[in-house]
Image (tube, rainbow, N blue to C red):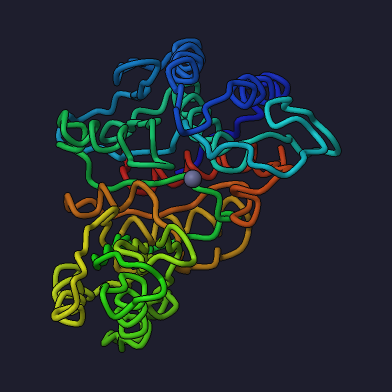
Length: 383
Ligand SMILES: [Zn+2]
């Protein structure tokens, strides 16, 4: 269907100021502090004529849930983005991480790309449809969530509160340079602990060395052969030994060693079976395994109407077919997809900017994405 552009209704300065206001708020996670950012989004939404609700999630934390009412109550499209960011990091920034400096068409700050830019685009896309007087067949719901960078606190609570009930599909505005991401790797973080028996370093025969015990187990894990079919959009599964701690002094036999392992999986792999294999590998050694983080690999079939709508909207708004691909990182899709919600990840900003010093987003990309999201929603939902 055809309708106008954001340019017909909003001044560029208004949208840029909205984004700057959001970037100036420090929502580094931990601790998160998303409450004020949720309030800012709700205020803008109210001005755009949208229903907005701030949902408190304990101390200084909150989701914002914003809605453009559709004609029917039995279907909806979910727009999703996270309000929190990773901390600015140790490296020196040329522009302050919360300065929201505007230089040569780039807006600098932690979260500019990942992903306050995408949130503003989605919000104004809903505002655009509202201004055009377009009523989609179902609701468009923007869930701006807390806590994605750590535990997906906001997405989990949104799902638990019944937020996904009528949702037919989800669009996640992580920075992809407007590529359409249809698959993301799963993640399984394990903590291994080996136990031994301490003794003087001159008499190792009287002790049991927890570090050598751990070494044997880690060598076995590193040699583990994944059995997975090649995935059209994802690189093969990986295993990384991330940390190791053990021992107190050179002349003491260590009685404890702890290591953490980061596994990235592809669709078709079962984390429960993987864990069983690993427990079998460590049997005989005095090593325990604890799961620290467990998110399944998820994907949406390429012929799903949501993917088709995402690709066709790219062709319509940008004049070329967007790249369809996978992503090695995880997003709130790992919370929504297991609930039966198909998803695409597509957003302004660049993936390589995420979590980097001097993070920025190009203002033009945020503005262009407004029309894109509006078209995507209407292609998917219809009137
Ligand atoms: Zn992100």
